[in-house]
Length: 334
Image (tube, rainbow, N blue to C red; front, side, top):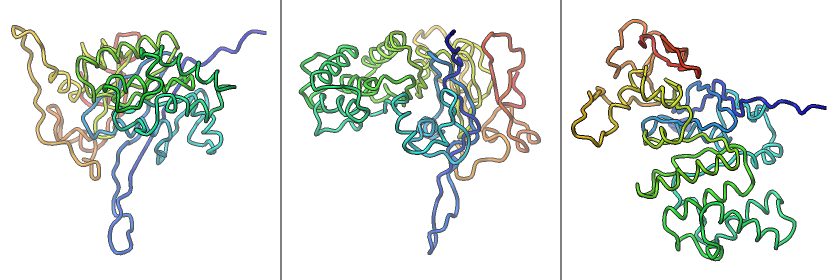
């Protein structure tokens, strides 16, 4: 009997919405809401890294947490390996969490200072009952340390005894303890020194090849995202405005916002100059986003009619010729 062929798409997000209510008045009624994520859809294939970039406050981290149901989405679907996890009961979701993990941004805040490394890495093993004895548990923890480039004597030490890069390695080891398929990497290198960032990114790429991991890599550093990602999605004010293969997006950005972001990347060669796209105004409030295309008040190519009347849908870019679809949400993308 032949094995069942697995769907190449591991994670499929459809029309995901997250709103945070704002309460006010004498009776604390809901008076408004923060529209953090507004109808986002994307797919991630097995073994792929999807980079997610955008300005601070655009909804990247909220989206990542909604995908794992660390924050409950307001509406939409999150289909993980064929199952819509938004409809799962708590007991079913707890079992599934072994396959879905997260690496947080700040390694200084995401580790319990009162627990040793052995206790930190042993906790997920105990919760999911993955080891049969103390010796088996100890052996697995040592394997995780070796896997993430940490010395074995680190097992009895506390988080304050490590550098930032070493702490992030511990966080990665903790995520790997339950042998997950999918990891949300929520700006995992932004709190680290530049000299350490490359080491952590290269470690994550090596682990992906060795263990067959799938990543959603959230960051605001465009060069880091270009290095690690197969595809890149660009977010603006709760919406994904462009998705493409990494090389294609950086070489041929279609959305005016993506063009502005990429123009801000510094070039080390002083003899090479590129035109800088300066956006006018500030990012609008997610409590009351602009009508139509959210980017239209700052867009250099916006027109008063269609851009203010209707939000553009994410669709194939004009002149698309690459094997991997290049999608853009803009009425006037060229």
